Length: 486
Ligand code: BG6
Image 1: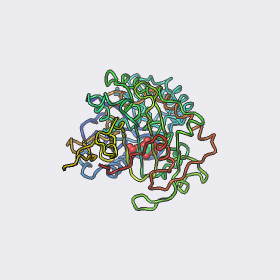
Image 2: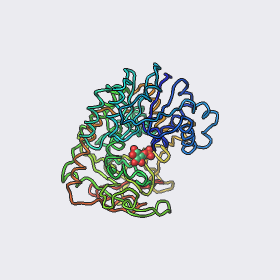
Image 3: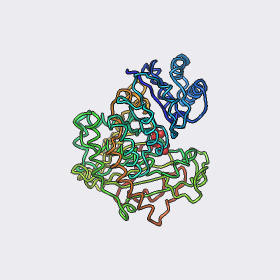
Image 4: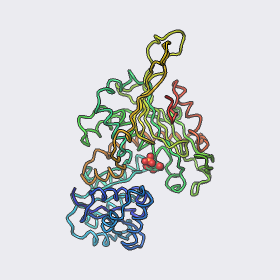
């Protein structure tokens, strides 16, 4: 693999500690990160290389499985890690220039910072003469907080980096299970004829979390679940699920198809947005038997905050394939389970030949689980053993952990490998990003203009009851059997 210098702005921050540095450790362990490649953490903190290396080792020990952290690998990895103390918003980039020297390796600038720093950092890098044709820029979400701010960032960044140099991260695209969705759809002929309005009754995408917003309240309270989760992760899942087959797995082939889905989303403005959305905010409750405070009692949350910690939406995609099929999207903090899944509910049988006034067999359902335990489960009907012709729901189950012995890559591990190899397929293009904001902004605006407050829900529940009502209006119910019904 090509050598490089990776600069992580926000190198001592939360994302770096929790995700980026542990992912880089795995790359080093697996031989993808060898000297002379370097990792340079950048930040204001005054500390030596040695102190930063201690911190990196600590982060790896904390985040990774004990058996994965090998002293011998750390001894190899840590000397490649350095710290550059500087204020990225200031004009003096000489410390960084000095560290980079005149090495010919490509430079990867990873901005794990708040989005307001993206444009100033890029401009300062350019002014200091540090950006070259083979440089890459990695932008961590959120990319702005609405269309206008995203466009402003883009305008300034595009003056320095070309589109083919920019890697916009949505770490869900790096998840093994999301890759598997591509494999399921386009590596099999079985599903394609069913992947359409004629066969599908409704689609549900749930990303439920047990964690609260505490600890990140200063970020979260200004953003909320719609901007933090729906604009990025849920819409990306929706795109991959609903897009037409791309002609190849190349970046623009895939991104063109995803963009068409975003363009085809039925706009939700004003009253329509209010009718098709539910926003909630958690109150105190219990998660797995432990009492947790309500959102308004979290440190750093404004006492009257109206920020939503839960969203449910009913979306429609106006294409020949999907017109009329409701896509229900749901995400929230402090929900009952940590769960991410896509559920396809198929249409019921046209007539019940098993008659006798018995209930028609329940429709087939395909559950694509991202976590916990990624896998695919197809619910079908089978005959109960015995004399009578009685049906029983059963399922066919593929558990990826059982099917494969090798360890799946962590999302950031995969994304780093893609960046190093200069492959853009798993990153958002600017037009996708803008289209996503264009769909999200009117919903946010409708909420701001309405008198409605976010609906309270108890921590540890599945969100406000209005979320069930949203589906009930269409004759649907959320798939909530986390241990599965069949
Ligand atoms: C991040 C959001 O992008 O994704 C967080 O900012 C959220 O609020 C996280 O907790 C969820 O990621 P994962 O991989 O744990 O599902």
